[in-house]
Amino acid sequence: MSTTRIPADSGQGLGKLVVAVLEIVRDLLERQALRRVDSGSLSADEVERLGNALIALDRQFAELRAVLEERIPAS
Image 1 (cartoon, rainbow, N blue to C red):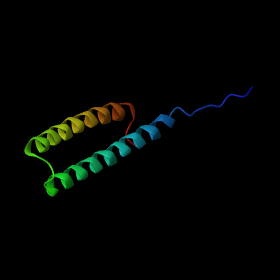
Image 2 (cartoon, rainbow, N blue to C red):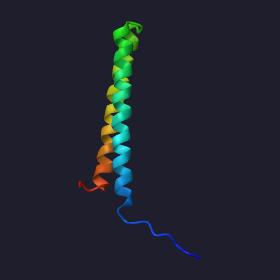
Image 3 (spheres, rainbow, N blue to C red):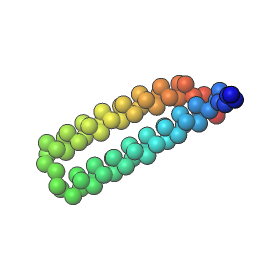
Image 4 (tube, rainbow, N blue to C red):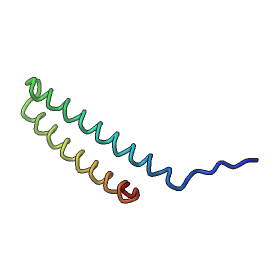
């Protein structure tokens, strides 16, 4: 039976990819939220909740990025 070796640095590329995808997702969510706010289809309460949700999401993404970048040395 043969064994496949995975290079020790292979996780770095995956971690960087995850961070990049998170940035794209965050940007898309923010753009969609702004479109909804600009369209006037949301009540004041919904705008407030949406803003709070985006702030919380940004904090969670920042925490995740920090953890991933801590494990992935900059190149």
